[in-house]
Amino acid sequence: MTSRIKGLMRSSECGVLDKNDLGKEVTLCGWINKYRDLGGLHFVDLRDKSGLIQLSFEDYLKNGGDEGVFKEFSHETVIKAEGVIGPRPESAVNPEMKTGAIELVVKSITVLSACDRHELPFIPNSPKEATEDLRLKYRYLDLRTNRLQNILKLRSDVSSRARKALLNENFIEVETPILYKSTPEGARDYLVPSRVHPGKVYALPQSPQTLKQLLMIGGTDRYFQIAKCFRDEDLRIDRQPEFTQIDIEVSFCELEFIKNLSRMLMSSVFAIDEDQIDFQTISYKECYDLYGTDKPDTRFGLIHQNFTQLFLNSDFSVFKSIAQEGGLIKGIFLPSTTGEMSRKDIDGLVNVVKPYGGKGVAFFKVNDGEVSGGISKFISPEMLSHFMEHQESSNGIWLFSADQDSSRAHACMDAVRRHLGIKYQMHEDAYKFLWVDNFPLFDWDEETKQLIPMHHPFTMPSKENLEAFLTGKPEELKEMTADCYDVVCNGYELASGSLRIYDPKIQERMFELLGLSPEEAKEKFGFFIEALKYGTPPHGGIAFGLDRIIMLLAKSDNIKDVVAFPKTTSASDLMSDCPSQPVDGQFQELGMSVIKKD
Image (cartoon, rainbow, N blue to C red; front, side):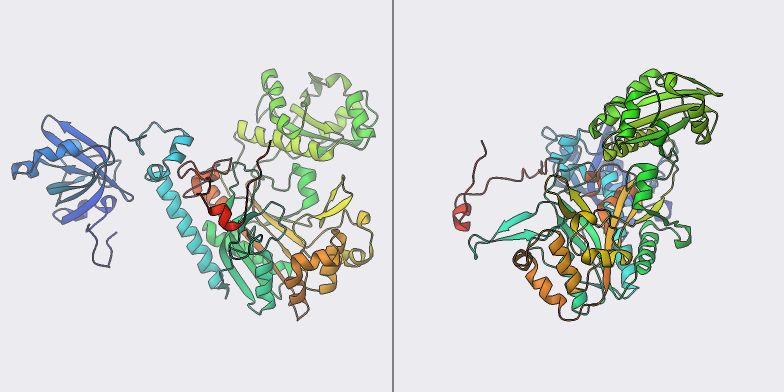
């Protein structure tokens, strides 16, 4: 692509040239991807982010070019080459490359920046990939690969599409502060000490939650921001300590508007016609009943079945006691047409459920009405009849997770389902979106016997629960639902949001139920509580995780792939070696000292 703006060192990019450019004089710049000396015939594959082109030097040498320049050629050396686009010899045409039928016949060559071939830790575009730690330490080299450059371009395109879609709906992009006050979002804050105010700190925002609500109070009406957020929490393969979200807030909206807006936005971002996006609506409870998680991958079946009551009076004492003591017994049926499980496969499921607190997976096989293996001796004919009503076919295997802690039973069965989906390649090549709603308003902390917010303390209780919310005792409100929702796709939570509290009395009651005294609430949220008194429009919002969206579009399962300069799972940057010790005097200037743990 040629720039309309004058002043570049090159007249074209390498990978965009083709036979239509034969005879054209061009200047190219890039990295040496490969250098070949074929007995005096010299060739270079020159690379920039647009692709490769071959450089030939026969004319250069015939016209008195300095042959000594080739001594400086090595992988990743940066050069500038001027010449004419000519045809490759027929025997050298490479149909796999866009530029495979042409070459640059070099007239002059300049080495702009030599690469130290002896110190180069790895070759970026080598078929043999370096280890992840090495690629993270030398991230700038890894960024030279086509894969990461394509992902950076994809990320830029997606951000642009999201902005365009929201601006077309009369949203206004507003930047909110990074240095702000701590607000509860379910994780620890990153704190920034203030030199000007000794002993006080700013918090890096976990999200712009109160700020975007204040924008609604301020009459902004429709806000969005591609916002940087920070959470000091344990990391996973799909989580970073700093992340980016497409943050949205709307005044005078119903829940239906947020849902339709989300569908429109996902249509734009994923470049799918809106009428082809099936935003299947499912409740939080249904998600757990059918899949054992609130972010299921619905590209394949293996629906969970609840067999707790069936085992209530069975001869299998382990399951019987779990059922009688209020636990949960779930099962999945894997048809033999989908996959056959050997004993080794079944025994290996122990390792699948162990990270979720499971001790194993029970099973029995069914073959034309006959049972075998595992717990089959405890399966009576009456029980088998019930199981067969839930089977997709007559032959297959039933797998079970059972636990007195229902959350563990859900999690283990979810893990088994995901494992089977991958093992037997059951995933449809599609994006399957879910709108998950009716989330609980609260979690319940058994140790403290205290309500804690499932989402955050500004979430509106469901309308049908409002009277009970205002008058009920905390222990009576554990199962109360909220006007809260998630967007899920292919097993990833892409977005979370809610309708917000806009009545000061409801907000005051929320703080009371969460155990905050009026003084504590004022100290933490005084500015926000006061703002609610001055006429607050009903409003709601949602925030989409940009990094996870890019993961899906890039067909990656590692969030580090889609962030330009990512952190490791220990929240460190191997390239810059941060976090690092402060330089001498910084702690003193801030009035701080470090307490070392034993």
